[in-house]
Length: 410
Ligand SMILES: Cc1ncc(COP(=O)(O)O)c(C=O)c1O
Image 1 (cartoon, helix red, strand yellow):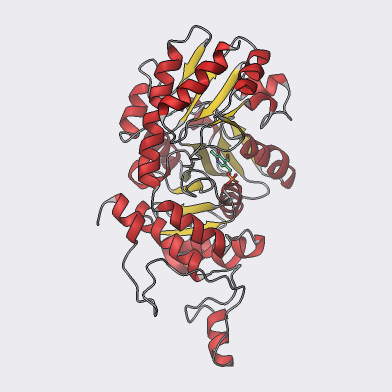
Image 2 (image 1 turned 30 degrees about the horizontal axis):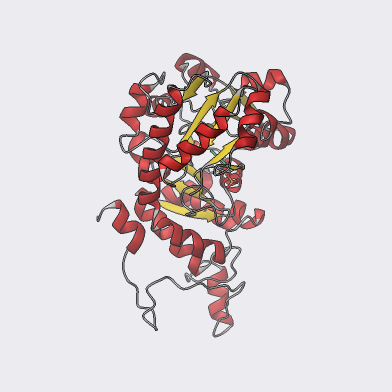
């Protein structure tokens, strides 16, 4: 296989476009026509591969899926409408009322909300553990557990844990590991090589190439025996390793309707082509900014997995040798100082989202986590004094100059 950057740009091959177009064309069409009744019947029965309706599949979306498939080395990929759709589709396919997942409170705020506010009332039991506590994780898994779920580098706590060891603990108990790989993408972390069974990604972030569109990806690495999952057992006996993906295609993904639009797939495939350049630059910029912030008297603490004093530095170096991403957090003296600093920024944008081309700042406690009580925020590692900085790909001197003038106003 060619290198990551080459594959991200070229895909598998230059398939013959009638006009020689170098870019996969955009099929902005809801439905596809058939020559006769038999052809459309065969397509509906799945006996003849064909696109019939873009909620189920679409050639432009398929081209995007194929490129991620090549880059991840996975069994198969399904692109969906958002990162949240990727998480909900996978967990709804694996688990349901009366069953259970093990996860951690150190997750993206809306993911926590999906578990607490959406899944729990539908009867899914959720246990939160500290993923660094392997005994607690092992003890939390029981007969009804259908998945262990965690984030690769947690947002915004930036916790890094020993993913291969967690995979081992889950597998010993017959449970798959589902990982949210949004902050790394397959470029910084090829989840298949570290025991992850299913990876979900918000392609809104690094992959979209500048935050043009919302999108998500489901990546089945093909490592888990789906016969061990009661919901997928029958399908696994019929189709083997493709049981999760085929259940999603023919049931959960199809019925929930959270498909990626062809237009967004087109833009995200374009974004993918410059992924390595942008990730390398944002990782380098984030490290430079983190080192600079560490020396500033107004900054109480800086958290970035690339710093020598990062608590899980050894694991971060082992798992992410190409870089640890573009997100860091800094603590100031108070919430008031955080607001004053944010308001003084001129280049850095006050915005949610991460891994944009632009540097973004956010006060998580008053935004993504505003619906939670102080105790809940504390249990999720979200402090009132903490700002999240998603470092972009601008000239790093300009980012630092803006931060410096912002801190000088305090
Ligand atoms: C780690 C992580 N997972 C999932 C999501 C949700 O992605 P989306 O906004 O594409 O639904 C986000 C969004 O910020 C995220 O940071």
